[in-house]
Image (cartoon, rainbow, N blue to C red; front, side, top):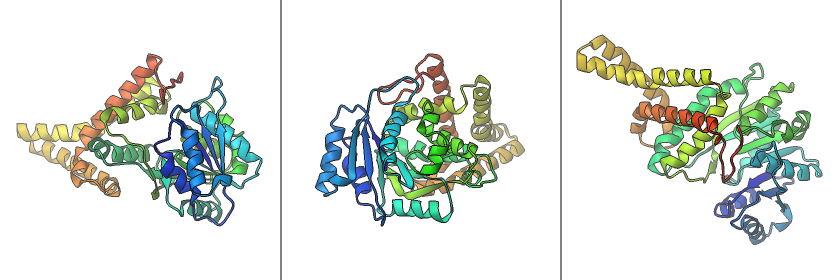
Length: 340
């Protein structure tokens, strides 16, 4: 297991504990890479392992200075993987330091990878959904992700679509070596999908992505600003920094999510009943399509009818992502700004 950690002292007592107590019959070694933390992350990791009597299974690495051309997370992963390579493992589990895992999660991931002959198995973990802004916007984050990366297409070897979830990804060692290691995607801001694309492009198309409740993120997004920054960090990257794709996205979001309700209300107030009927039916169908992810996150069904407002907010976040890129402030994360 490779766990990059930058200022994660508050969460590691829970998340690292969940890794150290996995119900897995095979050999497991955990490499925590302290990425220049200032909050005592390394000490907390060491104490957590010692309290569980698992100090011998934890390898704590202090990250070297970030070289040019690398993102911080990928550089931390690279160092952990290089150390772990000496053990010649069958698989690497790449997981974020804010993810708490069910005791059976590793075993189920390996069973899926071995039983279904998959080179990459990743899980879209359940994101925290407690505050108002989380309930409003987090389910939509997963909803929009599934539209961009249909899981069914990703999981079909006959399709070129590739995607993954970096918070919890199990990758076969041979597959990682074949693509040239993490170095092959060292500049990627959307590193999980870049890794999946590299594996599919290398010849093997046997990857798998699923949604799970067996692992969940403890990262809080209590305010609109925190969610806004998370999305704006990579939204324009997702569009390949293309003004044309940005324009198409803005038009598409307005047509799909804003126009049905807007035109439906116009029809009601102007007496154009057919216009109102068609567009309000479209709005209702759109809300019903959103309902399954609302139920998955166990939030009020009324949030399903907020999709036009949610779509507007995500549209504004995407526009802000482009603005940040053009101002040279794109890719900011945990005190670092990456030139995008």
